[in-house]
Image 1 (cartoon, rainbow, N blue to C red):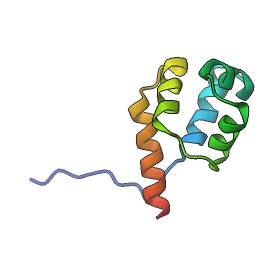
Image 2 (cartoon, rainbow, N blue to C red; image 1 turned 90 degrees about the vertical axis):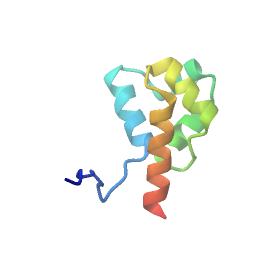
Image 3 (cartoon, rainbow, N blue to C red; image 1 turned 180 degrees about the vertical axis):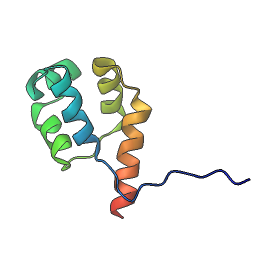
Image 4 (cartoon, rainbow, N blue to C red; image 1 turned 120 degrees about the vertical axis):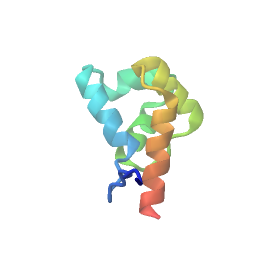
Length: 84
């Protein structure tokens, strides 16, 4: 018996997930940027989908939010593949 695979016809940008997580934890974009050691501009651009999420930044997200860097990078990869 062949196992069914889940393949949605959409992809969620990592910035969308990040914005939800920040709201859940009541963390502003500026405060999150400070905790990550990144600029507020970069965080805003990631949330807006204007800047890619780089591995080093994903590692900082992991440290601050406790969500594995691989998940952030997977969201980034899936989003760009879907857009292509």
